[in-house]
Length: 190
Image 1 (cartoon, rainbow, N blue to C red):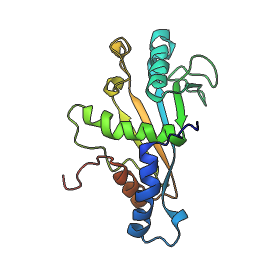
Image 2 (cartoon, rainbow, N blue to C red; image 1 turned 30 degrees about the vertical axis):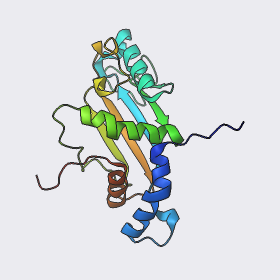
Image 3 (cartoon, helix red, strand yellow; image 1 turned 60 degrees about the vertical axis):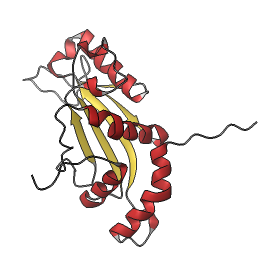
């Protein structure tokens, strides 16, 4: 008996509806010019607490639980005397993982529909966080809004940075793509 292949809900929605709608909305000639989510990078820096083993283990474990993937530690790229950091030496300055394919779409779906509605005093994500290539970065002040995090994991609070890398994106096109995914942006006339 053949096992049914699983596909993420948001990916199916993108392939069947969003892609065609964006092509019409943006007035593009070719379906391959439509912006597409390429990868999602979830990261967190360790900051001043990079020497605290409990803190760095908690950061790595949290990102691993949230994404369902192993994390990669990042060492300093250059020496900064004020922060007492030497290039490539010592404790990691941060942790990250890159999501692609179905995991990327599932994470985006959970973020938009489960996590962001649980953020306290939430008025929408900022529209100003796009770079020149149309990639979007979102920062969360604490990891406790994710349902995968238990009470024990929330004893050490830290922030999380989420970057959506969008292929064929401009600021306008990427905004429309993320809006179609359900990203709750701030109201413009504030």
